[in-house]
Image (cartoon, rainbow, N blue to C red):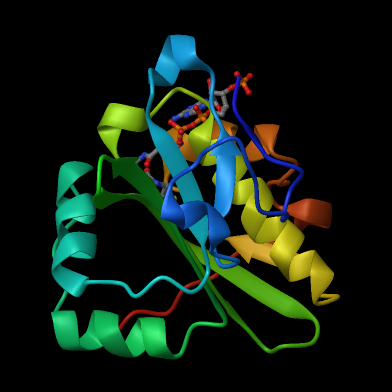
Length: 174
Ligand SMILES: CC(C)(COP(=O)(O)OP(=O)(O)OC[C@H]1O[C@@H](n2cnc3c(N)ncnc32)[C@H](O)[C@@H]1OP(=O)(O)O)[C@@H](O)C(=O)NCCC(=O)NCCS
């Protein structure tokens, strides 16, 4: 069982210097699953593109030109990263971002949890965190494009496939 400590408040039961940082939302973790690992989410943490690439590599995603990834991040409405703290080191173990018109619509992209942390409830909490952030900005239409093998993951979070028969359509260059 994983949950976010009082969603959006900082914690906590830890005495490290990180505990005073307002930009870190610490996740409560089941010690049976996570040992003494500490994890936080942030919308402000600087993203090292190489570290993000490694995370994407870890789940087998095709590489993308880093200059385009940088541009995509710069122009994203919301960028959330998940960090594991071990001693005085931190490592990015999760990521998601959303683009938006800032009023009605947002689309979530690049949702990833490092394989070492999958199936422990973190992806669910990460998605709930994204949705809470978007809802707190009064954005009510949240969409995403699901790979076939993760449709059920998103469905469990309340996402609906083809609502009222609406179909996602794509145009690709020849
Ligand atoms: C998809 C992903 C983000 C899920 O993260 P996760 O931390 O492993 O998921 P969780 O442990 O939070 O799972 C939450 C729930 O969804 C279920 N679930 C997780 N992955 C699932 C899958 N692929 N298919 C069906 N159900 C899934 C879990 O069993 C759990 O169910 P429960 O709430 O009934 O216990 C993660 O597996 C991942 O990074 N995959 C590779 C990248 C990817 O495919 N991203 C999505 C691109 S569209």
